[in-house]
Length: 245
Image (cartoon, one colour):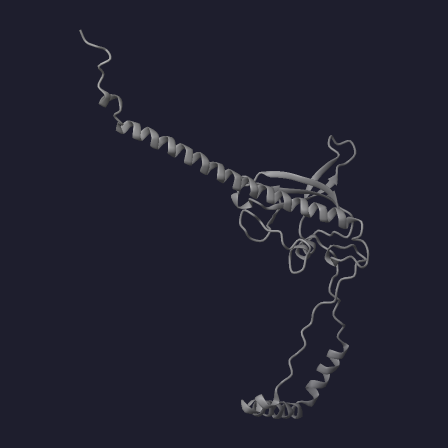
Protein backbone atom coordinates (compact mmCIF):
# COMPACT_ATOMS: atom_id res chain seq x y z
CA UNK A 1 0.00 0.00 0.00
CA UNK A 2 1.42 3.36 -1.04
CA UNK A 3 2.22 5.87 1.64
CA UNK A 4 0.76 9.30 0.71
CA UNK A 5 3.46 11.03 2.71
CA UNK A 6 6.19 9.71 0.43
CA UNK A 7 6.02 12.59 -2.10
CA UNK A 8 9.00 13.57 -4.18
CA UNK A 9 10.50 16.76 -2.65
CA UNK A 10 12.27 17.60 -5.91
CA UNK A 11 8.99 17.93 -7.81
CA UNK A 12 7.46 20.31 -5.18
CA UNK A 13 10.44 22.71 -5.31
CA UNK A 14 10.97 22.83 -9.07
CA UNK A 15 10.90 26.39 -10.59
CA UNK A 16 9.37 26.07 -14.02
CA UNK A 17 9.93 28.43 -16.96
CA UNK A 18 6.26 29.39 -16.84
CA UNK A 19 6.76 30.63 -13.28
CA UNK A 20 9.62 32.81 -14.50
CA UNK A 21 7.44 34.28 -17.24
CA UNK A 22 4.70 34.99 -14.71
CA UNK A 23 7.08 36.87 -12.41
CA UNK A 24 8.47 38.85 -15.35
CA UNK A 25 4.99 39.84 -16.41
CA UNK A 26 4.21 41.03 -12.87
CA UNK A 27 7.39 43.15 -12.85
CA UNK A 28 6.54 44.61 -16.26
CA UNK A 29 3.04 45.48 -15.12
CA UNK A 30 4.38 47.24 -12.01
CA UNK A 31 7.00 49.19 -14.02
CA UNK A 32 4.47 50.11 -16.70
CA UNK A 33 1.95 51.29 -14.12
CA UNK A 34 4.60 53.42 -12.41
CA UNK A 35 5.70 54.91 -15.74
CA UNK A 36 2.14 55.79 -16.74
CA UNK A 37 1.65 57.37 -13.33
CA UNK A 38 4.76 59.54 -13.79
CA UNK A 39 3.61 60.64 -17.25
CA UNK A 40 0.15 61.47 -15.96
CA UNK A 41 1.66 63.51 -13.14
CA UNK A 42 3.92 65.43 -15.53
CA UNK A 43 1.05 66.17 -17.92
CA UNK A 44 -1.13 67.22 -15.01
CA UNK A 45 1.57 69.62 -13.80
CA UNK A 46 1.80 71.15 -17.28
CA UNK A 47 -1.94 71.76 -17.24
CA UNK A 48 -1.68 73.30 -13.78
CA UNK A 49 1.09 75.64 -14.95
CA UNK A 50 -1.10 76.68 -17.88
CA UNK A 51 -3.92 77.42 -15.42
CA UNK A 52 -1.52 79.49 -13.32
CA UNK A 53 -0.63 81.46 -16.47
CA UNK A 54 -4.28 82.24 -17.01
CA UNK A 55 -4.73 83.21 -13.36
CA UNK A 56 -1.67 85.49 -13.57
CA UNK A 57 -3.21 87.33 -16.52
CA UNK A 58 -6.61 87.52 -14.80
CA UNK A 59 -5.08 88.91 -11.59
CA UNK A 60 -3.02 91.50 -13.45
CA UNK A 61 -6.01 92.63 -15.51
CA UNK A 62 -8.17 92.90 -12.39
CA UNK A 63 -5.59 94.96 -10.49
CA UNK A 64 -4.78 97.19 -13.48
CA UNK A 65 -8.42 97.83 -14.37
CA UNK A 66 -8.85 100.58 -11.76
CA UNK A 67 -5.75 102.56 -12.80
CA UNK A 68 -5.22 101.92 -16.48
CA UNK A 69 -7.18 105.01 -17.52
CA UNK A 70 -4.65 107.27 -15.75
CA UNK A 71 -2.20 109.30 -17.81
CA UNK A 72 0.79 107.79 -16.00
CA UNK A 73 -0.26 104.12 -16.10
CA UNK A 74 2.86 101.92 -15.82
CA UNK A 75 2.18 99.86 -18.96
CA UNK A 76 1.21 102.61 -21.39
CA UNK A 77 0.30 100.20 -24.22
CA UNK A 78 -2.45 98.74 -22.02
CA UNK A 79 -3.76 102.12 -20.84
CA UNK A 80 -6.73 104.23 -21.80
CA UNK A 81 -7.03 107.00 -24.40
CA UNK A 82 -5.38 109.57 -22.09
CA UNK A 83 -2.40 107.41 -21.12
CA UNK A 84 0.83 108.96 -22.38
CA UNK A 85 2.99 106.71 -24.53
CA UNK A 86 6.77 106.89 -23.93
CA UNK A 87 8.80 108.54 -26.71
CA UNK A 88 10.33 106.12 -29.21
CA UNK A 89 13.96 105.20 -28.68
CA UNK A 90 16.38 106.82 -31.13
CA UNK A 91 19.97 105.83 -31.74
CA UNK A 92 22.57 108.60 -31.95
CA UNK A 93 24.65 108.55 -35.18
CA UNK A 94 28.23 107.50 -34.69
CA UNK A 95 30.88 110.16 -35.31
CA UNK A 96 33.13 109.59 -38.30
CA UNK A 97 36.75 108.87 -37.40
CA UNK A 98 38.69 111.18 -39.73
CA UNK A 99 42.02 109.48 -39.12
CA UNK A 100 40.57 106.07 -39.99
CA UNK A 101 38.92 107.53 -43.07
CA UNK A 102 42.22 109.00 -44.24
CA UNK A 103 43.98 105.73 -43.59
CA UNK A 104 41.45 103.78 -45.67
CA UNK A 105 41.34 106.31 -48.48
CA UNK A 106 37.76 107.42 -47.72
CA UNK A 107 38.69 111.10 -47.89
CA UNK A 108 39.49 110.72 -51.57
CA UNK A 109 36.12 109.14 -52.25
CA UNK A 110 34.33 111.94 -50.39
CA UNK A 111 36.30 114.56 -52.33
CA UNK A 112 35.40 112.93 -55.62
CA UNK A 113 31.71 112.83 -54.67
CA UNK A 114 31.81 116.48 -53.57
CA UNK A 115 33.37 117.62 -56.84
CA UNK A 116 30.85 115.60 -58.85
CA UNK A 117 27.93 117.11 -56.94
CA UNK A 118 29.35 120.62 -57.41
CA UNK A 119 29.67 120.09 -61.16
CA UNK A 120 26.10 118.78 -61.38
CA UNK A 121 24.79 121.71 -59.35
CA UNK A 122 26.54 124.21 -61.65
CA UNK A 123 25.17 122.52 -64.74
CA UNK A 124 21.56 122.35 -63.54
CA UNK A 125 20.87 125.25 -61.16
CA UNK A 126 17.30 125.71 -62.34
CA UNK A 127 16.31 122.09 -61.81
CA UNK A 128 17.22 122.00 -58.13
CA UNK A 129 15.45 125.22 -57.16
CA UNK A 130 11.92 123.95 -57.85
CA UNK A 131 12.77 120.72 -56.05
CA UNK A 132 13.84 122.62 -52.94
CA UNK A 133 10.69 124.76 -53.06
CA UNK A 134 8.53 121.67 -53.42
CA UNK A 135 10.31 120.06 -50.49
CA UNK A 136 9.76 123.11 -48.29
CA UNK A 137 6.08 123.23 -49.24
CA UNK A 138 5.44 119.53 -48.58
CA UNK A 139 3.14 118.92 -45.58
CA UNK A 140 4.65 117.51 -42.41
CA UNK A 141 4.22 113.78 -41.84
CA UNK A 142 1.34 112.77 -39.61
CA UNK A 143 2.37 111.72 -36.11
CA UNK A 144 2.42 108.02 -35.32
CA UNK A 145 -0.84 106.60 -33.99
CA UNK A 146 -1.00 106.19 -30.24
CA UNK A 147 -4.18 104.10 -30.22
CA UNK A 148 -4.10 101.31 -27.64
CA UNK A 149 -4.77 97.89 -29.16
CA UNK A 150 -5.05 94.41 -27.70
CA UNK A 151 -2.04 93.14 -29.65
CA UNK A 152 0.14 96.00 -28.44
CA UNK A 153 -0.93 95.38 -24.86
CA UNK A 154 -0.07 91.66 -24.98
CA UNK A 155 3.32 92.45 -26.50
CA UNK A 156 4.07 95.00 -23.77
CA UNK A 157 3.09 92.51 -21.05
CA UNK A 158 5.10 89.54 -22.31
CA UNK A 159 8.27 91.06 -23.79
CA UNK A 160 11.31 92.97 -22.51
CA UNK A 161 10.49 94.32 -19.02
CA UNK A 162 6.80 93.42 -19.06
CA UNK A 163 5.19 92.27 -15.79
CA UNK A 164 4.31 88.84 -17.26
CA UNK A 165 7.49 88.24 -19.26
CA UNK A 166 8.49 85.19 -17.17
CA UNK A 167 5.42 83.16 -18.15
CA UNK A 168 5.96 80.35 -20.65
CA UNK A 169 4.10 77.52 -22.35
CA UNK A 170 4.86 74.36 -20.30
CA UNK A 171 3.96 72.01 -23.17
CA UNK A 172 6.61 73.51 -25.47
CA UNK A 173 8.94 75.13 -22.89
CA UNK A 174 8.85 78.17 -25.15
CA UNK A 175 7.14 81.58 -25.14
CA UNK A 176 3.44 81.91 -24.48
CA UNK A 177 1.17 81.15 -27.41
CA UNK A 178 -2.21 82.73 -28.04
CA UNK A 179 -5.15 81.45 -30.06
CA UNK A 180 -8.68 82.47 -30.97
CA UNK A 181 -10.12 79.22 -29.61
CA UNK A 182 -9.14 75.75 -28.38
CA UNK A 183 -9.58 73.10 -31.08
CA UNK A 184 -9.08 69.40 -30.15
CA UNK A 185 -8.23 68.66 -33.79
CA UNK A 186 -5.06 70.78 -33.46
CA UNK A 187 -2.72 69.31 -30.83
CA UNK A 188 -0.31 72.22 -31.34
CA UNK A 189 -2.67 74.42 -29.30
CA UNK A 190 -1.75 72.66 -26.04
CA UNK A 191 -0.95 75.31 -23.44
CA UNK A 192 -2.22 78.17 -25.59
CA UNK A 193 -4.15 81.04 -24.01
CA UNK A 194 -7.47 82.28 -25.36
CA UNK A 195 -8.98 85.70 -24.62
CA UNK A 196 -12.55 86.41 -25.66
CA UNK A 197 -14.52 89.60 -25.42
CA UNK A 198 -17.80 89.24 -23.50
CA UNK A 199 -20.48 91.26 -25.30
CA UNK A 200 -24.13 91.77 -24.29
CA UNK A 201 -26.86 90.27 -26.42
CA UNK A 202 -29.90 92.21 -27.66
CA UNK A 203 -32.81 92.56 -25.21
CA UNK A 204 -35.04 89.50 -25.09
CA UNK A 205 -32.28 87.01 -25.94
CA UNK A 206 -32.20 83.75 -23.96
CA UNK A 207 -28.61 84.42 -22.85
CA UNK A 208 -27.44 87.83 -21.57
CA UNK A 209 -23.97 87.69 -23.16
CA UNK A 210 -21.97 86.00 -25.90
CA UNK A 211 -18.25 85.58 -26.64
CA UNK A 212 -16.41 87.30 -29.48
CA UNK A 213 -12.87 86.77 -30.72
CA UNK A 214 -10.54 89.42 -29.32
CA UNK A 215 -8.33 90.36 -32.25
CA UNK A 216 -4.91 92.03 -31.99
CA UNK A 217 -6.25 95.11 -33.79
CA UNK A 218 -9.20 95.60 -31.39
CA UNK A 219 -9.12 98.82 -29.38
CA UNK A 220 -8.81 98.58 -25.59
CA UNK A 221 -9.28 102.28 -24.85
CA UNK A 222 -12.66 101.51 -23.32
CA UNK A 223 -13.48 99.08 -20.51
CA UNK A 224 -13.79 95.46 -21.61
CA UNK A 225 -15.24 92.28 -20.16
CA UNK A 226 -12.78 89.49 -20.96
CA UNK A 227 -13.03 85.71 -20.61
CA UNK A 228 -9.72 83.94 -19.96
CA UNK A 229 -9.35 80.32 -21.15
CA UNK A 230 -6.41 77.93 -21.56
CA UNK A 231 -6.05 74.82 -23.74
CA UNK A 232 -5.08 71.56 -22.02
CA UNK A 233 -2.96 68.71 -23.42
CA UNK A 234 -5.72 67.62 -25.80
CA UNK A 235 -6.41 71.24 -26.85
CA UNK A 236 -9.70 71.18 -24.94
CA UNK A 237 -10.73 74.50 -23.34
CA UNK A 238 -10.46 75.08 -19.59
CA UNK A 239 -12.16 78.25 -18.41
CA UNK A 240 -10.10 80.26 -15.92
CA UNK A 241 -11.94 83.49 -15.14
CA UNK A 242 -14.13 86.33 -16.40
CA UNK A 243 -12.68 89.75 -15.58
CA UNK A 244 -13.14 93.44 -16.31
CA UNK A 245 -10.26 95.26 -17.91
